[in-house]
Image (cartoon, rainbow, N blue to C red; front, side, top):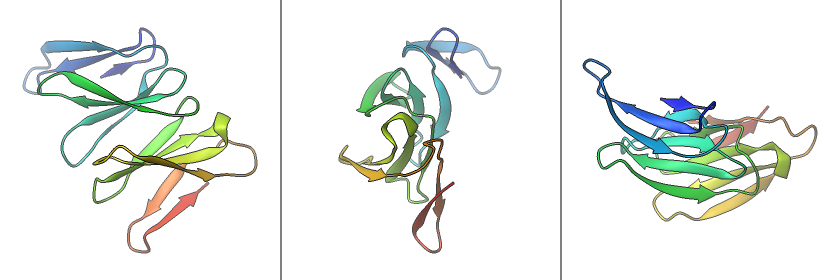
Length: 125
């Protein structure tokens, strides 16, 4: 459970929701997703996406150009597409190798990436 108020992610045991851990991320921790390897991804701070291993309670970071406002993991679980409106881009990160590239956007900057699985296209609204 991510808490934008205190910047933490709390790990709860599924059976009875007992707290089993806490990871400090920083301000504005929100937008939680789970990938196909059961890692928990959380957007936070001025420019990062945390990848949390819920078993070991360890964290790695995907650095971004600005605060992530939303993201989507592709159906294969290999890429994450991150809305970075202040940078006017969708950041595309390959989760297996950690490389990130940019898809520039135009317009207002409040965009959200959506994946069309059958057509293998990214749609931005």
